[in-house]
Amino acid sequence: MTVLVTYDVETTTRAGRRRLRSAAKVCKNYGQRVQFSVFECSVNEAQYEALISKLKKTIKQDTDSLRVYKLRGNREDYLMTFGQDRYVNFDEPLVL
Amino acid sequence: MTVLVTYDVETTTRAGRRRLRSAAKVCKNYGQRVQFSVFECSVNEAQYEALISKLKKTIKQDTDSLRVYKLRGNREDYLMTFGQDRYVNFDEPLVL
Figure 1 (tube, rainbow over the protein chains, first blue to last red):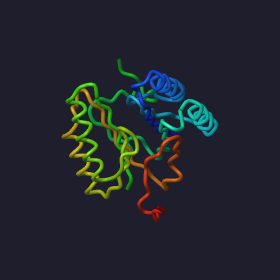
Figure 2: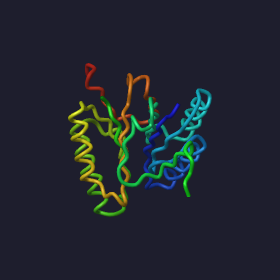
Figure 3: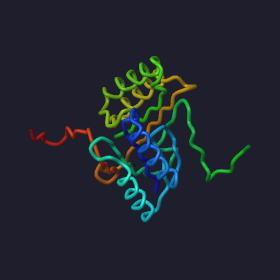
Figure 4: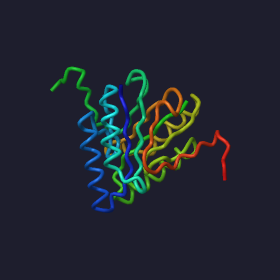
C-alpha cells in the first residue's frame, strides 16, 4: 500500500532539524520525499508497522506532529500536482 | 469528499511567506489546517474545482510545489496521528 507521511517540526531549533532529518531518513527507506516534510512510502503490512514504530521513536510528542495517511486506488486518480514535482515513478521505464 | 492539500514554498522569502498565507487562506475556506503546510478540506465536486483553480493562481509554478490527494474511506481507517493534533472534528459533539 501507499502511505503519505507528513511531519511538522519546529525547524528553527537544531534539535528540531535533527528530528526532521531522522524522520526523513526513516521515510526514505520506504519511499520518496515529495516535499520538504511530505513523503510517499510504498509498504506492505510489516513494513508499515516498522515505519510507524521507527517514526514514533523519532518525534517529540509534545511539540511535533506526525500524520500518516493511507492512499487508496490508482495514483493518477487520487493525486494532482502543480508546480514542482520531484516524485520519480520507478515502476515506469526511465527515459534519460 | 476529503482532500489533503500539501504545499511546499520557500518561506525564507517574504514573497514565499505571502504565498503560503494566501494558500492557507484559500484552504481554510474549505477545511482545516492540520500542519504548517498541510490542510484537510471537505469539498463537493464544484468546490473541489474552485479550490484547485484558486490554489493554482496562488502558487509560483517554478519554485513551489502543490499536491492535492483525495482521501477515501473513513477517517479512522486512513489516518493515524502521533504527537500534536490540531484537527477538530466538527461533525461530533464538542465537549467543552
